[in-house]
Image 1 (cartoon, one colour):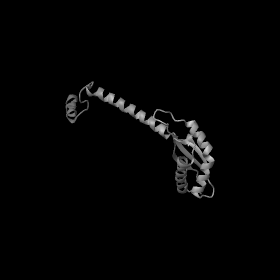
Image 2: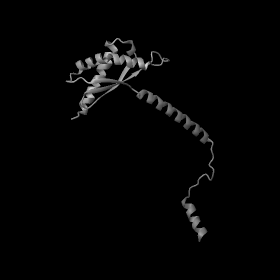
Image 3: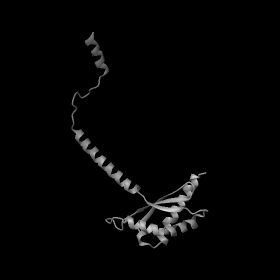
Image 4: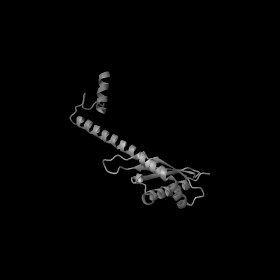
Amino acid sequence: MVDHARAARLAKRITTIVATAISTEIKDPRLAHVTITDCRVTGDLHDATVFYTVMGASVDAEPDVAEAAAGLAAATGVLRTKVGAGTGVRFTPTLRFELDTVPDATRAMDELLARARAQDELVARAAEDAQPAGESDPYKHEDDESSGEDRLG
């Protein structure tokens, strides 16, 4: 039977343990700019997928994702040992690291929204001085209906 609440608690605990171990205990320079963002644990609590992002060393520098992935692969055994000691579960979950694509998707969505706002501003500026093609009020009103009866009859 799958206990989703227990899996969520374990995932949160794994996230904390791995992030702490990377920042304080593991001295691999390839992991200097790695941030743990999330963790998902399977229902049977045997496998954990840990999501991470890599920030550049400076604002202009592009992050080295391949080096970070190699550093995480090298540290997987140590991290799994830390998770086993820190969680106290009978079977320590296997750890699999995946690059988190949410920040990139968020950045792309922000760019699309900015372009849409700019396009809306252009349309609004063009509509400021626009004149209607036909009458200023093209809808029929009650006064118009009474005059229509006179024309027919």
